[in-house]
Image (cartoon, rainbow, N blue to C red; front, side, top):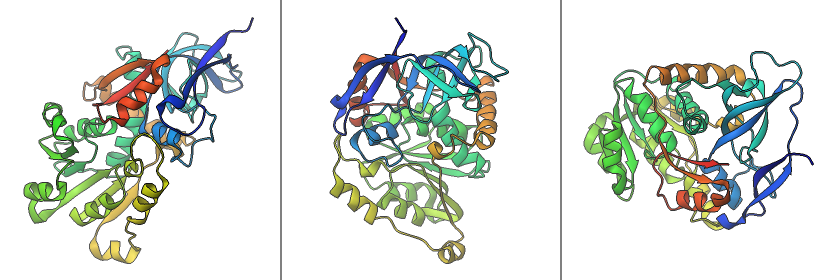
Length: 341
């Protein structure tokens, strides 16, 4: 009898209970690929958007999503060098990560530092590369800059706080009031209440000078508010649009309203305002190891120096994938939520 892997399938668009655990024969590692026995899989907000039918890049249901895993290599394809059976690795997947076995091209796989746990490994690639790309690779974050981080208590937000801490930045983090004490513990000097007027709260800190760098995963009107809040030579970087999702089901009218609320800026206005608007979408960079690999290598060096520490809020077994998604929908999570086979 063939060995069977387990996968969490989105059977149709809808609430978390559309997630179903199924079995299938183990995949084989083809040329230039390795097979990984997964010990932990990362959940990202994009997975929730895919489940409700608001993530255009996701395969159409039924499908298996998931962008990142950690585990051990148990099969090596032809032409692979630099890896051995039993290597502890983390990997970026272009979907399919909600599985206890994955086959991944070797440019998307990297060995884990000896002290890194499997939970930390699965919590690392997507959020830290996203934060690094926004702040250091394309964002040119200068020491002492002011940084405003939306969804600051989320996994990307915490990664951004840790990176900003290494540059001695002034940090403003937008989150619900119940998470402000936690943000201060992480090094964010100025938590802002997501339930209030965060712009006015930010102005009370930075005054007319404005904010040098804004990281915004909310979208909609928030992007316009952020642009107006930027300092001269400031940069607004979008990395998501969580405002399109209302609850744990799809609401197309609400999503459309959020899209229509987005203000567009011409190159002429950007030039005259001395401002920059850009974006980071890691899913569209997975196939570009020339861009991803140097960032991931630099981040692992920072981890080994003790500058970065992935914060895992909770782990859920595969059988409780629906509960894991609902936990994130309910805005209860601080940092990363994982699935463990």
